[in-house]
Image (cartoon, rainbow, N blue to C red; front, side, top):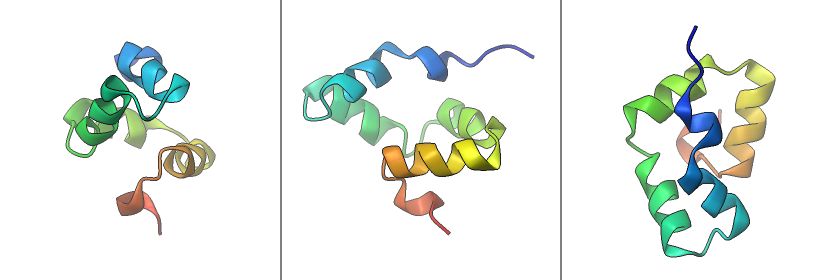
Length: 63
């Protein structure tokens, strides 16, 4: 299985470094509809999904 680019995305790293930067805010907005991110997110284990959802405040993924 190929590794997703989302796990080491440069824009994601910019968000992690400074979530108020333009690139960080763009990345956060982008993942709301990105099919690649959705596929990456769905490939995570249940525990990892919870951690990622909390870290990036994914309101639509909270049960």
